[in-house]
Image 1 (cartoon, rainbow over the protein chains, first blue to last red):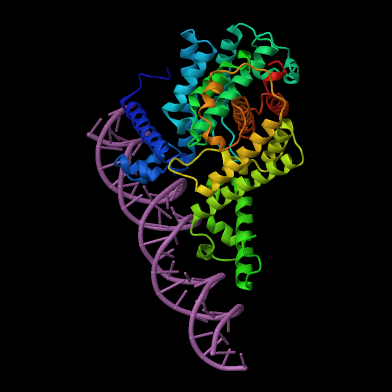
Image 2: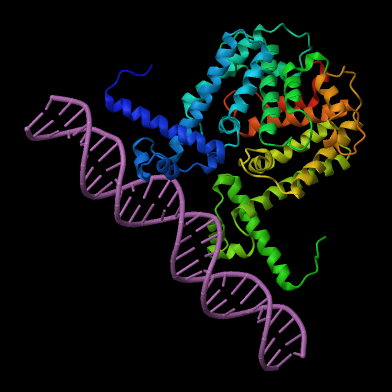
Length: 216
Length: 216
DNA sequence: CATTTTAGTTATAGCTTCTAACTCAAGCGA
DNA sequence: TCGCTTGAGTTAGAAGCTATAACTAAAATG
């Protein structure tokens, strides 16, 4: 996509960057984002400390890059599922699979934010992309004959976030509920808040994914 | 409660511990848990570095103590609301108020966990206490005539987490949905994932708190 | 072939957590 | 009231971290 056929210098540079990110993901998976150490990565790569600053301007820059890749990965997963004709439960399965694949990646995207942090614009653009797929799949769903609640009415004239998507408020409402409910189950499960409670978190997840129209 | 009338030594010690924790909460509120620095706290208190180790065995110990206080605070908030006769929406309001009061405290309790971490038993006991209040309030609610879904059936013989609470599976199901759905909205809101989307997060929250029986 | 670019180095500043050894004052029993 | 003991706070220092500066050496480019 972006100038793929560059000189050998660029090629090498891109490869080292990728290796750094790979090691960073390993560290994050085992120690969380707060445990990520540039020095440790450098050691693992056989180079010494400050060399990494040739590739990333600092720890924050590296983490931001990982967050970006996390969003990108989820957006691609969603896009692929939707293109394969997934319905809403199918999208939910894709989300759950993606989350369980690397819990810390999920938390990097949807977890505790650092108070001052503001995500760069291109990342929020990917977030919108994810939401767009969700809206598409929601819109394709057979409408549920539910009477609109107060929030759905509110959405009728607060739909800026949906961009120019033509979905009616009921679909917007459904998409938001889908997102927040699945995140609720998933984040608590991944954080270990269900451990020792003895029930099957996946059943809860799929029940929430099915939505309330099954009688709940 | 715990040996209140102790010698002046103990009294002083307890007060300094409290001051340390107060400064720690300030730091966490402005910089997050990852930005908490023992040295900085010591500086603010006019004492120098290692003095803090007389009061806490290390950074992790201090943070664990703060987590404990966070849980305790939420449990007390819930208990107070329930004792004041709050129904489920009332409990939801209490939760939201508690969360907005100090978002980073919410994340300390329900946010991204550090991979290896296992909460001490007395903290999980408080978590059960919170769940017990929730179950009580759910049980007092007028039952919704909803046909049980697969997860509710599953709960019928996976109810260990409810302790000896006599609530039927439908109530357990409602309590879990209440918890996960409100956490879903709240954590995304506090993490800033709704900023720029233009809708009123509080309306979404109360809609989710009202539950699906309003037609959704 | 000479020049420029740049990847990687070491040295260093300044921060962190945390341990060790020490000082000195306050509390307490006789 | 005296003397001993406990313990709060100190400085020193080890080991780690991020990040910058200055330098070396190798590779790409004119």
